[in-house]
Image 1: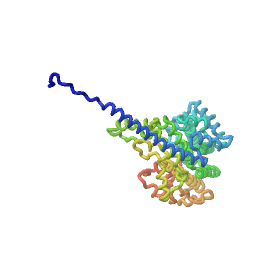
Image 2: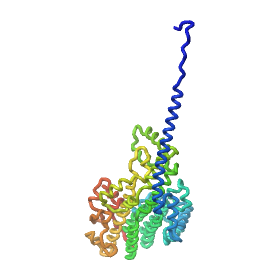
Image 3: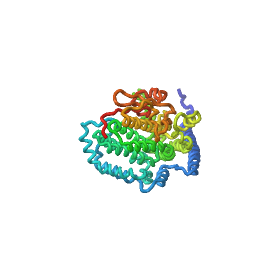
Image 4: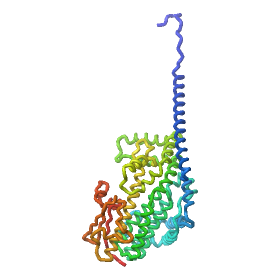
Length: 475
């Protein structure tokens, strides 16, 4: 109770709004300085790594790599013809495209599909003619410097990816010709699939090289069907084996990885593309079935990805680009090295294998996307080619002698004086002859006994096994 006439006590001024303001100002200043320091340090490392590559004359950006590819190309080359073939195929409505996606490349074509196949092949004669013309020319780069200027749209190499569509068309044509007994046409189309894969040899980026390997896989699977259906001429066996040996000797991911290093740095400087890549990485890592807290995790993850892709995340992206450009060439060359690796090689590879993939910028990196994928793809392609070269000799032996060889050593000849064990750790193969006409060649059990290679289908896909069954053969 206040006494009447007593002095009113003075109220102290409220200081907390001012204190809060100054605290927030100091915090913002500290965060700004931290961002600036992080950006300057990352930029210093980026400039240092970029300068080292410039000094060695190696590309540091996507457009730089595309220009260098163009300068190395022979003229005239196949690029314009392939683009025209794709335009013709699009104008024709891409007949047989859906059927090509549905059919296994090594499976027979059902008589129910004969009408569709014949109609599609009649509508694509001009496409095949353009393909034949392009395959007679040296490979040319399908990504031009003009395309490369729009990284956000073109870094996915749309033209290169469409070549798989043409490979499926050739596969259907080859298998259909084999089933109809036209051995010469079947061989011609089969050979064209492999030559088409080599049109990507000058497209020195990782995705086109994966597409190249995928095209080789289409050829290998088609070859199994063709060889099981028809007999080839001696010169056709020799020509196909020479093509396979040539592909095997030149198949290298190192030139692509040198350019991929530059492409990766360019993408990190293109926020919309970075955000899309990070979202893809997070989606591929998502648990299945989703956990009860998946919604919360996704929300936090998306906000983080948006922050990394915004100007706020520039120091993080610049640091990642610096680390990518700093990958030594020796680490990239390991990808092409056959197994087994020594301990030092394995340690160097483990140190750098995740540096060129966007998954490491997510909140929970999984290392699912790393240079290990390139290693696995390279080994699989080399092993599939080695298995098919031996299968060619098995089929030729049966054609010449009326029976299959008993020992794998009998497959050696002038073109293959020793068994192709380089990509199988130097370990031996085994032959299994079936009661019905056919055979299986399998790699050493030490390579095939792993849980991830437990079934014949998976082993065949990994290049650790090949099976061939003979149907009605026609000359």
